[in-house]
Length: 324
Image (cartoon, rainbow, N blue to C red; front, side, top):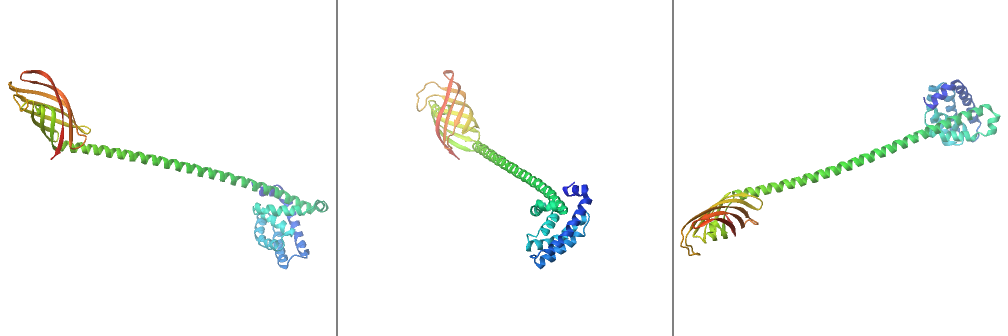
C-alpha cells in the first residue's frame, strides 16, 4: 500500500473534512489579495471551485489533474500566493509527483508561523497535514533516488561485465585466429615438404661423382642415372668397371638409400693389376642434397672380391646433379 493510500485508509473522513474546510478558505484569500493579477484571480477561483467539489481519493486525484493547469497560471503570475502554493503542493502529492510537491509543501509549511497555528485550529491542522505529506514525499523521493542509484550501479556493473566479456571473447578469438594461422602455416610447410619430397621422388637426374664409391671402381669417377627412386651408377677407377643399383627414399633434404653393387677385377687405367675376376657387395647410406644441383653421399657396407676376403666398403662421393 502506498503512503497516500494508507493515509486515506487510516483517516479518510478526517482528511475529507479538513480538505473541504481548507478549499473553502482559499477563494476568500485569493479574492482578498490586492496584488493578484485578474487572470491569476480567475485561475485561482477556477482551481478552488474544482477542488472544493471533490470528495474521495479518486475524485480528488481527478480534480487535481483538472486544477493543476489553473494553479500553474497562478504560480507563474503570483509565485508567493500561499493559497495556490498549498493547493498545488496538495495536488502534486496526490498525483504522485513527489519531487515537485516537496518544494511547494516546504514553502507552504514555512509560511505558517507558530503563532498562526496556535491562533487557528484549522490552520494548524492544514499545516500538520502538509508536514505529514512533506515527510512522506521526501521519504518516497529518497527511496526512488536510492533505487535509481542502485539501478545505475547495476547498469554500470552489467556494462562492465559485458565489456570484459567482450574483451575476453575478442582475446580468445584473436588467440584462436593466431593458432589457426600458425596451424595453417605449419600445414602449408608440411604440404610443401611433401610436395618437394614427391617431386624429388619422381624427378629424373644425372649425377657426376668422384671419390670412394663401388661404381667408381672403389676410387675413381662415376655417373649415376636416377629415375625417381631407382638409380643406376656406372664408373671406373681402381677397378676397370663398377656398377651399382640403388633404391632411394626421400628423407629431409636428400635420400636414404640401399645399394647392391659389383665390380670387375682386373687392370684399370689407374692400377696395373694381374688378378682378374669380380667383386660384389652392398651399402646403405644417405645422399644429401643441400641444394638441388649438388649431391654429397656417405654410406658404408660390406663386399667381397676375387683375391680378397669379405671387407668393409665405404661409399663417400661428391658431385654435381643435372636434372633431365
